Image 1: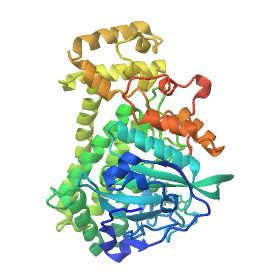
Image 2 (image 1 turned 180 degrees about the horizontal axis):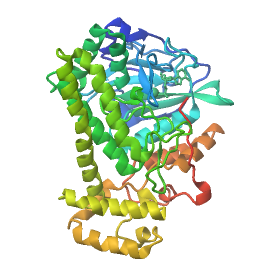
Image 3 (image 1 turned 90 degrees about the vertical axis):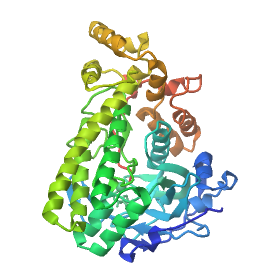
Image 4 (image 1 turned 120 degrees about the vertical axis):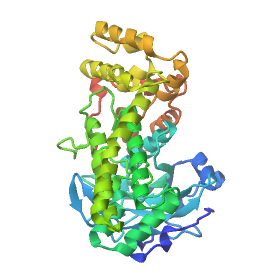
Length: 468
Ligand code: AMP
Ligand code: MG
């Protein structure tokens, strides 16, 4: 398999990573490959039938496999030593759109950063990441993507014996807030400066220095979270080591899309106190940017002045987020000329949805039809809202609503269903769901209609588990 590698991270100071080969596996088999992404990367889709490459058994020419060092705040607690414990960067390509991208194997064996982990992943989280990341991309959300997934033919042991799997992940980079924190915490100014220079050249070429870099990352991240909110997406583990500096959604673990709308929704079984609940995501986003700013301060010549200006920059997160959130939800309501005055129209609808347990996706997907009205218990309240909405929405609301309100998301019970079947050796549900979620705005067909349906009360899956 020919991959046009062009590696840059491997040329950075050596304390930033460790050269590390994947550990070969017994009997790799392809689960899925992504032909359109391969084409974007300059890889011939005809060569994708390469289980050995996607399993790490065969290293393609030009690869420079390595594991990256990083640190992070996990649920608010500082951990100075994380790093790629089960992910190995094969290398980078400059894709046909001119954008540099990482190609990484996740679940490819232990690295010096594995701590007590086995360096592996099991099939369930690999399927979840594949489905959700490709769905996010199809819905226009910046995200890492899935180039391939394989089973390894080897078991992994969690609480039970599970089939091992590896996902090949593609990202604009895997540099995180936690990457900066790693070097800032160690006082390694040489690496910190090299990292900042690398990130500016690679992701923010218009930034004329560290302060501008901070502003640009804040803006991207705030807009990203606004997009999550508009889709009812809950990341689940917004630790600083899971925050991409490129502003992409990264590290799909116990993530989920809400079915019935509730602002306090939490899915992750390990998120005991709801730190990463749906409605907390913007606040946590600002907190994460404060950690990023803190890690950048040592690069600034005047520490006190930097603290002051960076505090202002972080405080600006809220404004960027609120503006982006308004634009996202106005589009969902078919309002093209939105102003601050539209805020109550949006929040009033969300309030009714929460009270009446309405399905987040389907309320918007069918807005203006009885199918949406039927979601509400208090019809009078909904009708009153609907009159306000009809008076406000734009004449050409249809097109913008159709492009802003997905009909199909990877609903949790469908993802679980695909995983359960996959574990038993049946990949058909996974492929059917993948096909459906990659065309989220398309008219429903006989094959896809079931994926648009909200779960029955007994089908609801309200708990997700970490990607380990
Ligand atoms: P995550 O919660 O998946 O973002 O992972 C947090 C940290 O734990 C990262 O440094 C991961 O690389 C590491 N990690 C997670 N699972 C494993 C595993 N099975 N083996 C080794 N390291 C792991
Ligand atoms: Mg992570």
